[in-house]
Picture 1 (cartoon, rainbow, N blue to C red):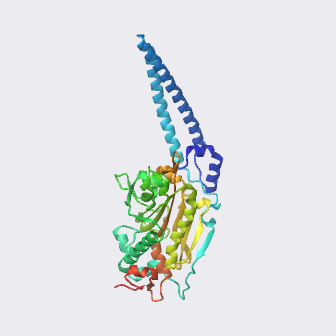
Picture 2 (picture 1 turned 180 degrees about the vertical axis):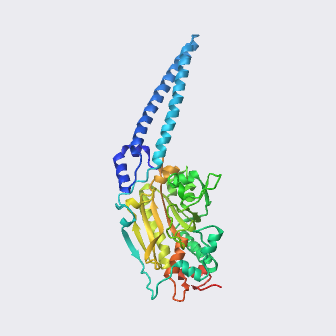
Picture 3 (picture 1 turned 135 degrees about the vertical axis):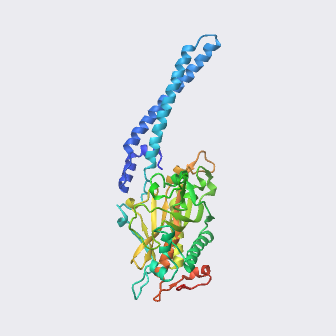
Length: 426
C-alpha cells in the first residue's frame, strides 16, 4: 500500500505510474477526501482547544463559588459536535484507506515499459532445449502411460484441475520438495519454515491478495480463514505488526506448502496436465531486508531460484516483466520460464519480485536502525524456488525417452533411492 502523504505529494508521479501500468484509481477522490480530512482535523483541534480553555474557566468559576451552568451546557454541545466530526472523519479515513488499498505499487525505474506479456524482454537463456527424433509427448500422456498420474480419478475424487500421483510420480514430487528445501537451506542461507496452510483475512490483506483478488481465493465457509494461495502469505506475515532490529536483517525464509487457487478467469486454459491446477506444491523463498539492499537481494533471490534448474539441467530463460504485466504488489519482477518440448515454448515456473515497502506498510513490518530514533518500513521480496508440479512436468518432457520412460536427473537420484529411470508401473 502507498502512503497517503506519498500519494498526495507525488500525485503526478503516481498518475504516471498508473498510466504505465494501464491501471486506474480514484486519485481525484482521494485528493478531495484528504482535503476534507485535513479540514475535519482542524475543526476538531479548534473545538478541543476551545473545550479545554472553557473547562479551565468553568473550574475557576466553580472554585470561586460562581454559577457555570451555561458554560457547561455549551461545552456539552461542543463535545457532541466533536463526536459527530469524529464519525465523519472515521468514514472519510476509511474511504481513503479503501482507495489506497486499490492502488498498485509504483514500478521501479528499471522496469521496462510495455502493455502486456508480449512486451516482456528476455534477459537471457540458459541450457539448450533437447532435440528429439520424434514428436515429444506431453507430460500428462507420459505420466498416464507410466501409470504415475491419474487425472480422471482425481476428477472423481474432487473435480477438474486436481492431481493424483502414484508410485514413482508421488516420490518424484516429494524428492523435488526435499531437494529444493535442502539446496536453499544448506547452500543459500535460508531458514526453513513450516507455516499454517490456512490464514486469516488480515494476513491476506497484508500481502495484497485482499481485497483485490478475493475471487482467486478459497475461503472456508463460516470462518475468517482462507487456504493459502502461496507460502508468501503466511511466511511474510510472520513479522506483521513487529519492529525488527536492523542487525537481524536480511531475514531469509524458505517454506514448502500446498497452494490453493481458484484460477478465476482462466477457463479453458491449460485444462490438461500439471501447469494450471487448483492445488499444487511449491517451495517459496521470502526475504525481509533494509530498503537500500533490496534490489541487490532481488538479484540473489533470482540466482537462488535459477540454481535449482541448473542443477536439474532443465533449459530455461529469464524475462523481465514490463509495467503492464507487473503484479499488483510488485515494484520489479523477473519470471523464470522452463522449456516444455511438447508445446515448443517456455512456461513460467517462478516469479521473483521486490515489493519495496508496499507489503510492509499493509502488514506494518518495520525496523529500527542502530543509534537512530523512530522506525522505517522494511522491504519484502519473494519468489518460487520452485513450483514443484511444473518442475515435475518439465523433467518428464525434457528427459523423456523413445520407449516412453523418463530419466531422472542425476542430482535427484539420491532422493529417489538410487532410481535412474521411471518406467511403466503395473
